[in-house]
Image (cartoon, rainbow, N blue to C red; front, top):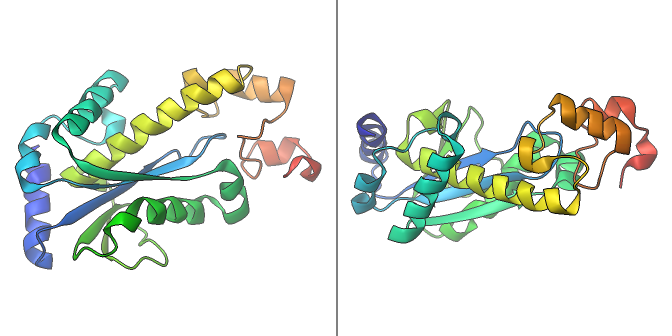
Length: 211
């Protein structure tokens, strides 16, 4: 955690702000479900509670849940935003990700903060000062915290979808293109939560299936 905290301190000094907002997403790659973004603001006295935080992809599901519950217990401020599968098909995944990030960040628009955004791209049409950071979830603690929230809540959402659409196994693969998921799509066709512009769906199913 020391390196991640030192990174955030360095940026705060460089940008002359005491408020950093970490912004990250989960779910850009799957064939189904929403992309979920989180904007997270850690108070200076909250950093000490997250020595074990890291990029959510490097943590086990159990560890992510543990850190997420700890964030809630001590009152870490975060907001999430979703962009649906239909919005992803309409806009493309990058623009839908920006949409989810804007939705997550609206609560902070009036705050003199800087948003540290995971990835190489600045968020389009975004009123806050921002700093895109490649591999930011492995460098910045506030981005790592945002990545954990986004991943935990998206996984929970996909577990709910599994109950609504039990043929696809969403609870197990969270919408990614596993062999079992691809076989289920082949057998049952896409459901409303599938991203029909994503390969292999766009290659196998006709445009009449689009909403």
